[in-house]
Structures are given as C-alpha cells and as structure tokens.
Image (tube, rainbow, N blue to C red; front, side, top):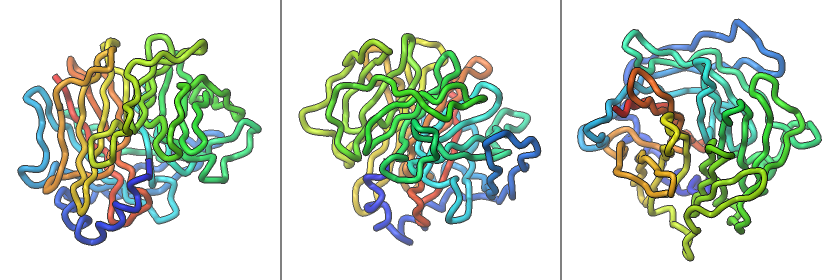
Length: 328
C-alpha cells in the first residue's frame, strides 16, 4: 500500500538516520541463482544483518523471541523495492509481490540455530494480465496481497483496480490468471484488499481501512463489517495476514504512521471471528521500524516462525527489511 508514501518521503534524512540504528555488518551478496527457471530472471542484491535497534523501541511478548533479520539493498531500478506482501513456498523459499507488478522468489538462509541470516537466489518475473501480456501500468499492477492456497495456487490481490486473481501453481504459473470472487464493498482507490490469506474453505480478505471477509468461489461472507469511518493511517491498520499453522486462526501485521516521524508496526493473532489478540511484537523508534506490509507463518520446532517484510516505496529514506520472530 503506498498511500502513506508521500508522507514517508517527508521524513527525509532525519527519519533515515533514526531507522539506521539497527544496521550491523554487511553480509555481502546472496548466493546467485545457479538453477535458472523458465520465465524467471536472476536479480542481484546486497544484504545486511539487522538487529532490533536501541532499547525502548521493540517490545516483544514474553513468549516471543527475535530470530534474526536482514536488510535487502538493491539498485534503484531493481524489482526488490516496494514489496507489498510475503508468503512461504513450503520448499525453503519465499515469494513476494511488489505494488508495481513484480513477483519475486528467494531461498531462505538460516544458520545452525535456525536464525534468519540471508536470502539467496533472488529471481523475478512480471505478473501478467488476463490476456497473458506482462503488466505495464501502475493502475493494473498495484499488487498488495498474496496468498498460497492449500492446493498450491498463488492468489494476488490488487488495488486501484480492485480484484483477486489466481495465477495457478507457483511452479507453473498461468499466464492468463483467473478472476476470483471479492467482497461486494466499494473500496477506496488506494485503500483496498491489503491482507490476503488462505482460509479453510477459500481465502480471507482484510481491507486496509477496515472490514474482514471470508470468500469462496460461491460468495464472500462478512466477518467484520467495514467501519462507517475508514480507519485512518494515524491508527493501526492491517497490512498483511497469514494463516496460523495450527489452522484455527491467522497472524496479522499492522502499521501506523503519524507525522513527523512516528512509524510503527505490530504483530497480533486473529481468531476465526476476526477478534485480535494481545500484541506479540511492537516495533517503533528508536528501534528498528519501517513500513511493514508482509507476513508469513510456519510451524518450526514446536513454535510458530513469523517473517515480516517492509515496503520501502522506492524511497531512499526507507529500507526493505525482513525480520523473523518465534512465537512459543
């Protein structure tokens, strides 16, 4: 979601300097893509280790541990900018989507203790329109949400032109995506279906300005009604969602932004009825923070591993960060 992009740019050097509190040693370049895949193009990047920053910034619940983090540094024209959502592929990799219409894959790199220390084999491709042609226009390519169904299909939600398209299996993407049912709600142009996740009988949709729906091929059922007054950017809004590996709920990442430079993110668990539980992770200055929009969850060694990803809006004052947390 890039509605707060102009506001983020106003922070300039001041906010950038504060955000850099978490930088540590450079990890250098990730391992190259030695196994090229049809339709995908290798992408270069540099990686830096990231901590949680100065005390007083990050707040973690008692059952949550920080499990490492990285910053992705790429050239100005790289597809590794403005990444809007994140999901795990089940084979040790991740898939993410940008709000300019790029799909990106990479392989997780964990150390012996299971902490996130890198990403390897970055590769990208353009999302396509229903006629099979690559998306070339921002109005068509403003992808915000990503889901991988139980059957392995890749779903992408878009705003501006609000829709959800099914691109088929990630291993053999369909160049002509199939339109799926969406909520019968008049989303604002730049406040669309920001949260998207697989659900027991279809897919769950969260509107950034409020509202929650469970959808299937037959219909969308309202779980939480959209508020009469849209949730403002100065309050926490859901920007990403993924299914709890236990199968009976979801994890969400929320974002808040207040001028002049109060940018925050937090993680909570969502019950099937849409009720949000206690805050598990809160990120704010003077610690590591940014415009976090993506979240992915998996079961790992008796805990739930969560990854969150930030959208830098192609803004040099922001960063593309991926952080990991273990919820016991």
